[in-house]
Amino acid sequence: MTRAGARRWWALGAIVLAVLAITLDVTVLTVALPTLAGALKASESELQWFVTAYTLALVAGMLPAGLVGDRYGRKAVMVAALLLFAAGSTGCAFAPDPTVFIVARVALGLAGAAIIVMALSVITVLFDEAERPRAIGIWGAANFVGLPLGPILGGWMLTHVPWGWIFLMNVPVALLALLAVAALVPESRSAERPGIDALGVLLSSAGLVAVMYGVVEAGDKGWGDSSATAPGFAGLAVLAAFVLWERRLAGQPGGQPLIDLSLFRSRSFTWGVVLTAFGVFGLFGPMFALPQYFQAIMGLDPQGSGLRLLPVIAGLLVGAVPADRVAARLGAKVAVAAGFAVVVAGLALGTMMTARSGDAFIGAWTFVAGAGAGLGFATAASTALVELSAERSGVGSALLQAIIKLGPAFGASILGSVLNSTYQSQVAVAALPAQTAAAVKESVFGGIAVARQLGSPQLLASVRASFAAGIDDAIRVAAIVAVAGVALALVFLPAHRRVAQPSEAPQAQTGQASVG
Image (cartoon, rainbow, N blue to C red):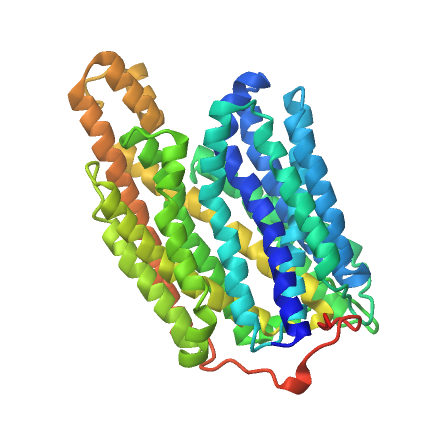
């Protein structure tokens, strides 16, 4: 391997470290909410905004971050974002009240958007089409490693040190990533600076935020609640207006739209993006329900719950890291379809889960589903990214990431609704007073608390069995989505991915990759 080639992979290590900082922050909050409620005297609404403010800022910031990176320099944007991320983490750690904490979470969301988008954008510039699938596989693995690591570290730290340290631990990771990026990642930008499509930025950000907010609200209040779904439909209307505006701008002499809509003429890009979102939805929907199963049904603490997510992470690593070699041998079409087929097999096993299922069975099916998702996710993402020119890699990567980030939200909301519907319809509350029955139906944790207060083993068994049945139904829906992924990959993805020639190896300051 040449010195330039080796430095590219070291640069990827710096990018992976930056991505790990983001995933740690996302997952650590899940175990900290009960502690934050007491420490900051936060209401239920404020606790929801601790999560929602970050998510909305993350989605809103992606396309603008991609544009700024293409225009002013992707390395510069990543360095600035890492500094903002360290500052936001410090703000969370020392927040005196919920308002300051929410402001700090918004800063973290904006920083996270820029880091996530620039990570993919820099990978697109650094690596040619032959190397890119492996780089994407490693990037994907980094995304997943933080998922169990956050709850495990967070659970341990909340037991042994003040709560602020769960955010302060992000600071050295972010600063180390900053030093590595500054030293190893070359600067790159578009050779011709893209124009600032102010209306496009406004419409795209507002539309994505409204859709995300609507999905979050629908998951909380139910998809039949018009006040919850109205923002989502309004967001879709705004996004439709955004597309019309972009088409109009593209048709004007000298027009510089935010998004190059011609990308969607490529089957590789369009279906690579769609199938990546399908993979995220199909796997992460059930994964959001499993921690509840571990804590409510198995009686584990947050740290034990995080440890039991390790098999799915191991599966994701096993599937994602060799994805480039599988795709090179079989072609992207077959590799993605095979990945989704393995997900179907794992989820089919998962539908057999009961309230008595043990660690070995749960670990087995989550490992299989994770391995399939890793293969399908990494291959579908690289199939989309291979169509991005280095000129617009920032905005193109931002578009891919924005769609991917909607996948978990839709998965958690839709599959959560399926789970709740089954749980509420099956749990035995007919003999209970109306107020007590409502408390049981509110959540599995409420049902277990009521059963223990009443000293009713029959109600306790019904709560656990009903919740397990709800998870099974949610997994069945996810499996149907994965089956659709197999069909879509076989029908729409190109049979073979174009391989870059050595003469196509890019140079950095022209928007192409060079690290020599």
